[in-house]
Length: 126
Image 1 (cartoon, rainbow, N blue to C red):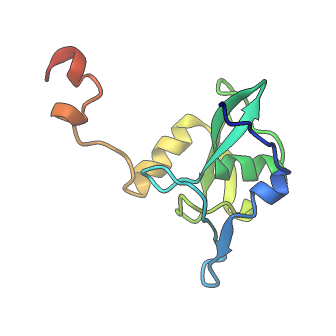
Image 2 (cartoon, helix red, strand yellow; image 1 turned 120 degrees about the horizontal axis):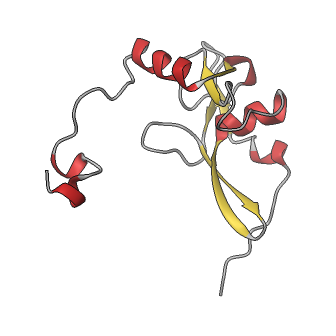
């Protein structure tokens, strides 16, 4: 039997966080990806869609995010804390700003991925 997705109010869904009194980060306590970014499941036309908690927080508290083709389609953190969903720590930027931010904070993946860690390993065998 298929699991029925029951949509909750976004405020209730975004309440999965603990506040860090030192940084004032709202640390996401729900599911996270391998890089520490909060993950959420949303429903759209009967389909389950994954989204990032910090993006949903930005949309809920501050407004829409541009389309992937727009100049401001990324939500960046001023606090350098991937699990933070505090809207006061989030701002919009473009892909270039996001890349520079990752590089400046030593989060960029600049090392070549060799072997099974390389996404093309199955195709090329290298």
